[in-house]
Length: 158
Image 1 (tube, rainbow, N blue to C red):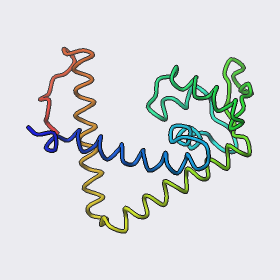
Image 2 (tube, rainbow, N blue to C red):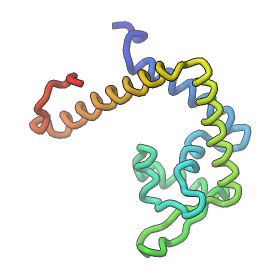
Image 3 (cartoon, one colour):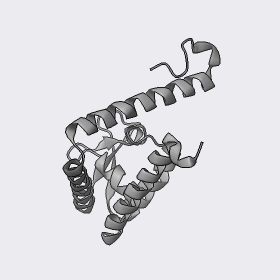
C-alpha cells in the first residue's frame, strides 16, 4: 500500500497544513497554535479548573503544566484557588489572554467558513461520519491493546 492510499497519511498531512497555517497567524501575534487551543478551552468569565483543560484538548496533564506556566509568564492567564474545592486551581484569562483567544476563535471561524464555501453540506456530513467511524476503530484498537480479553466483536465492524 502506498502512503497516499492510507487514511493516516491524509489525516496527518491535512493536520500539518492546518497547523502551519494557524501557527503563521499566531506567530504574527506572538503566540502558538497550541497556546491558542488552550486559550479557547478556558471559560472567559468563570475560568476553568486546571485539571479539566488537558482532557478537553486530549493532552497529558504534564504537557499542559509546562504550557500553563509559560502562558502565565507571558501574561495570558492567571491562577486562583477554586472557591468550592480549595485543593483545586482555576485558570482565568487576562485581558491579553482574552484578546488572543478572540484571535484564535476568529482564525478557526474564518478557516471553517472558507472550507464551507468549497465543500458542500452533504460532503461535510459524510466527512464527519467517516471521522466518527475512524475514531470508533481507534477506540476499539485501544481497548484491544489495553485488555484483549474485553474485546468481543470483530475489529473493523462499524
